Length: 248
Image (tube, rainbow, N blue to C red; front, side, top):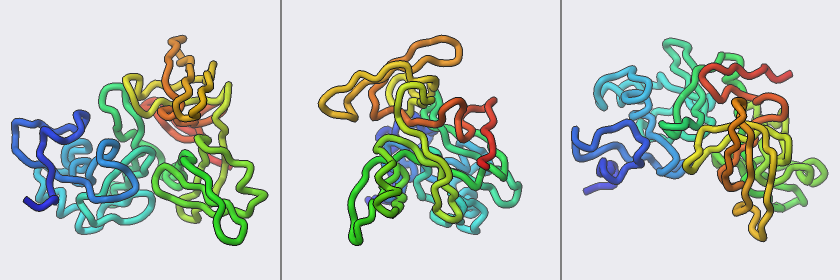
């Protein structure tokens, strides 16, 4: 069997597809997000946003260039959509951001056309490249090359606000006490609040952190599951009832 599809029982549990309706489901293409943390564009259109009823209809919508991901038209119905990606439905002018959800793991929240210009990305790695520049490797596969003086101020696991049309950094938030952290994986996925404690270990990504949510709940997670989203308030919309400020 070609690897175009995936057996439904092997798909991530959070995908909104029933294992009893059929044998196969769309397998995401190789892309910026791993299979376990992404959703094929066709399933997003059909099963999450419910613009279509069948896979054939979803393929038609995507194939005719009616969907943008991060400002670019995507015609591959298997394209993997993941954390913080911006989805634009061209005919209706509706825009969504993919954010963590406590029960659905990853889910779209509506955002404004103005906010669709910006994306929040986590710095996964920093490397020195030819010419003495520093390259930032971001969570969505994006790479940014900066002069050494500028690049050295950014730290791994911090977050940068990107203008997606120019691929330019507009803002930066360091992973530190007092910052706002959003949990993007694990049993506490979807919670966010002030980082109140960081317990360091010999392996940075294995360190643990505590956040205090808006309703006073204390939640613990590992640093690798924490995505910094702002200082006093989130730089982008990360919840259904919360609107982010427009960057200046």
